[in-house]
Structure formats: structure tokens, C-alpha cells
Image 1 (cartoon, rainbow, N blue to C red):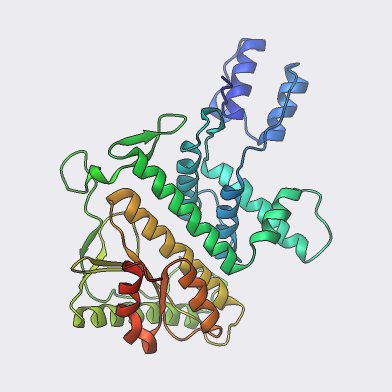
Image 2: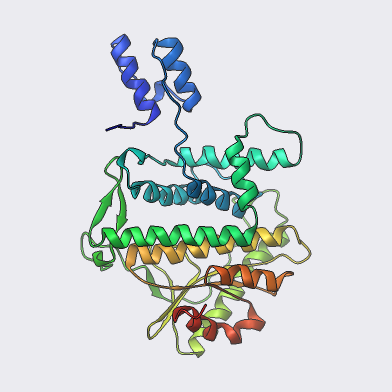
Length: 358
């Protein structure tokens, strides 16, 4: 059977074989092409084949992450990059053929994010030789928000189905890392169990004054208004749900950093809140796309880690400029979009999603 290894592990082994010396972690850095040059020129190895082993579904998830966070440039240390790496680790761990299972470290994900960044810049200028035709194809096929959202939902559903086959228990990836856990694992506080993901709603959060950690390019008044608007929407939504008989919850686990959760009988919700800047039509689609991606992630995490089926809600501070289009985009992936004037429809829509009428 074909066994695959991380490219740097191959170089380290080849170096020891040829030169009798062990490479330390800090002695070598670089991507696949650097590895190829090292093997071919320094150690007289012949590289038989370069494998492009990223599935289309993986690249679609990467594109979804890239477009959702644009114009921000994600770094390898960002939680968003690490979160995507975890999803992709689970995806490749469920490959039916063992030889197709690969590592998906945050650094690997960053390379793919940067590839789509190059494609993005290429669209505004001349053709970039560093952009692969495959990334161009994925971009052209899935840049549309509605089509991409449907595909992302289908991918996440397949991941959930894969975990169901593994449950109860734990599945392992190529290096023995835990990549999937069945719902039977539970979420109590005893040793070996996950902590409960929610706690009772703690009320409105105090908004700290803008400090050194705020983005330098951000206008101070806009930065403060955005944070306060976010909290106003979050608290108003919590009070609305309490008035309609829901137990409202805050996050209690680092695994899930949602804005709000709620439960009433069998109906359980998870919510992401997004402020929308007035007069900034270019930023609004990015804010909505980012929020949609986040709440899909939280819904999937509740199912994967705790065995809970939650209805996903994206709450924004006002009606979006292309409201009907965004309602349909969210509806296509069973996410309820709401804003203060639309909250009267919220509970009914969530019941419809729960009962499969969407």
C-alpha cells in the first residue's frame, strides 16, 4: 500500500540516509517545491511524482473562508485558520482509501488561502503565473455566494454523516490525532468528558474603550459604534427570546464561541450577530458572508462535539441592502436571517427549519 508522509519528514529521513546527520526542526523550512529542490540537488534523489491531493470540496471550503474574511489577510496563527484546518483534518480522515489521507496543518491551509488571494489579485490585473488553473476553476464555479453556500452545507452534512458512522467513540487521523467524536461521548464535567458548551445568559457585555489592540486603520468612532451595535442587537435578541419562553445561553466552552444560544422544549438555537456599517455597501456582503460561515461552523460543531441539532440564526442590526437575496442565500442552507424589525417571524421560521419544512 502507498504510504504518504509529510514532505519535510521525507527530507529529514533522506538527509539522515545520505549524510548520516539528523535534521532538527529549525534546520529546514519551505514548501513542496523547496523539498523537491533539496531532494534532487542536495541529496541526488529522483522525485517520481508531485501529488495534488486536495479534493475539490476542500478547496471550496478554503475559498469560502477566504471570501468570508476578505479583505482581511488570515495568518497561520489566527483561530479562523486553525478552525478550518480542523475541519479539513476531519474531511481527509474520512477518506475511504487510506492512501488518500493527508495532514492538513494550519500552514497547509494558509498556502491554499494565499493561492486564492493570488487569484483575487489576478482578476484586477494581468495573469499571474503562480495561480494554478485548478484554483481559477474553483473560483469561477463557486464565487457566487448562493451556489457556494449550498455546496458548503452539503460538505458539512457529509462530515456529520461520517461522524455518525464513527460514533460512539473516536476516529483517528494519519498521525493518531483525534478527528471525530461520536455524540455518545457526552458533555459532562467529569474527567475525560467535554465541558458543557453553554451557560445561562450573563446579560449585556461591557464594551471596553478602544485600546491599542484595535486595528490602527479603523476609525475610532466606527470601531466603538460597531462593538456597541453588536452588543445592543445581541442583548435585544436575548430579551426577545426570553419573553417567548426560551432559556437563553452564553458560550461556556472554548470549542464554541457563538454569540447566543437558546432552547425551548426540543427547539434549540445557535446565533451569530453582525453589525452592518451604514453607507459602506462594499463591506456589507463581507460581513454577512462572514457571519453565515461562522454560524454554519457553530451548528456543525454542536452536532459533531455534543450531538445537538441546533437551528442556526444570523442576526444583523438592520435590514441588509439586498435583503431578499440574503434571505434566500441563508434559507438555501437552512439558516434563519433576522434583524429587529423581522424578529416577529423568527420563532416560526426556526420551528419550520426544525421540522424540515425548509
